[in-house]
Image 1 (cartoon, helix red, strand yellow):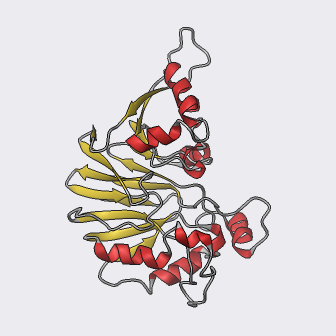
Image 2 (spheres, helix red, strand yellow):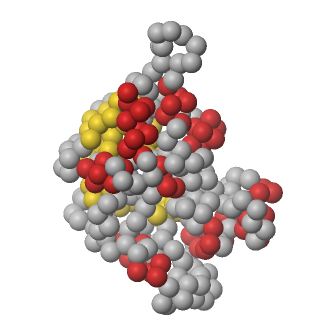
Image 3 (cartoon, rainbow, N blue to C red):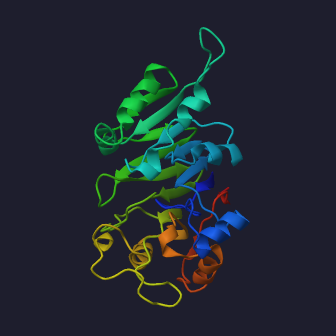
Amino acid sequence: MQIEFLGTGGAMAIPRPLCQCDICKEGREKGLPYSRSGPSVFIHGPNVLIDTPEDSYMQLNRSRISNIDGVFYSHWHPDHVMGRRVLESMNADWINHPAKGTTTDVYLPEQVAIDFQTRLGTAEHLAFFDSQKYISLHELSDGDKVSLNGVTITPFRLSEDYVYAFLFEGEGKRILIAPDELFGWEPPELGELDVAVLPTGVCEFHPITGERQISADHPVLKEEATFRQTLEIIEKLQVKEVFLTHIEEPDQLSFDDLKQVENTLLQNKKISFAFDTLIVDLT
């Protein structure tokens, strides 16, 4: 299996439109790896796409992906779903009659399917795609597993129980993908993992200087895991290598800053910050 990071930004990608802060200007001027698009990852082997941010068109066009055998959604937040029209663009046939387009399987974990009914018009949009045969919708119950190309994918809820992580098992490897929302999560016994992909968490304190960046009474700290809390979660996982993603522009950390932070992190586990277009080969 290979992990291809399509987008490693968060709800606020880098650069933000019109923003003239140093981080955004650098991302705009230098491009990759200083720029970051919306959160999405692809796993080669099972050929699974997780989430469709607004940047999905661009991400897929610059990727090494040639075929998608399944799309999984982790939760309803707009930065993870609002690029869903890419599913139509991939599969619709606007020339032939009757149409000869393709169909992509889309998998919705139990709570995701429920939330899509009331959030952002997602259920109606996907139901239309299904009726046009651009996609084939599959709603999963908690505990269900999906097997694609010899790899088993198990969605499971995190502590914020509207959001799901995914365990990939196959080809002699075990990969944990948790796209977002680690707040309050105590990892269950997952066994030994080869790789974990986790959100970085908000930087309450600057990871280099230690200076407070978010006031202690800020409401975001009651609903978002911090970077320090993410590191505590990593300590509890039996994992060989960790890639941190979902890196937010408001944290004001450049690619160079993050490389510096990497040198200060836990020595018993390899921890790296992912960047757009990074490919991790597990073969």
